[in-house]
Image (cartoon, rainbow, N blue to C red; front, side, top):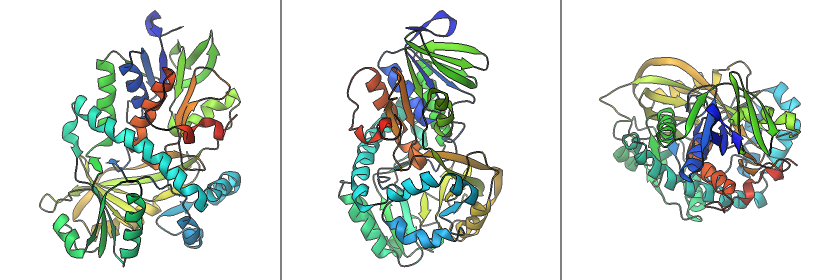
Length: 419
């Protein structure tokens, strides 16, 4: 084994304290392995903080399905709320764009949905166990989430319901009256809804990640806050150079989300990673007109959800460089639409921007690096990382222990993109 902090023998170092990294560390520790998790910020403070807080049973359809081709003409205008894209980025990353579009072939949709279904099923079970064990059970709402259409969305709702039913995922198609009964405090703007009944949500995804990290620490794992500078093979294991020292272990898990690819580049890996940037803003809720569950406005391509900080309104996807200047136009365009459904007051706090790591097939990397023993990759969970983090972490921990993951992880093998 390598030498860890304070001379202790360490089995596993996990880089990244978002939902995926914390889950990998927690799953490894629950197997009796010694674990150090490292991040430059506190757990749950980056991408895992800013999502919609949905633990979704139905997020099995990747972004690039055959429907993408039908919608492509309106996306090319670069004004649609669902998708904005940066032209210089698209030119510089034309290879990624082409591979992303190629993955939208009909023959590739169902296998990817089946892979995500297995990952999500394992994740939901762990979430429901861990959130209680971590003392954060009060944060979870077992009230489903609602996808809603202002225009005539009946055909779309029934098609989505049928696609989910193929995998045994339950949902309910709702009319305007049903929606009003389900959400009596919203303005009746929707004609059709699809309620994902087997989905849960939380009132603070960042706080949930912190609760899981505390459970890790209470169980003997180490949580270290420092910037990662470099990783190197060392003495049959791995050495991690930090801003304030170095640590080493037999196994190293890279779960740094959108920062993962650049850390791996010195080892000769060229990961085709892009970034689904997203934005959110909180608003003061009206306590007399409470929103009861997350609602995805299909026409406006935004989501609004009740959070501890207030009503969180999240925007669609922006494809751009990870660290490009913020462009709040998508968010600004949908806030008035959100106000037409939910009554809320002034903005609270700063507007937030995050970058969700995405591979061309919209599936994460989960598994061993092809050319380096003891190096494990766990990133690329795109916009469903909060949902899929526990299953990803459990799979990595099983592989480290030489056992089979709790689901078929073959579709997520890193070797499909790197050699």
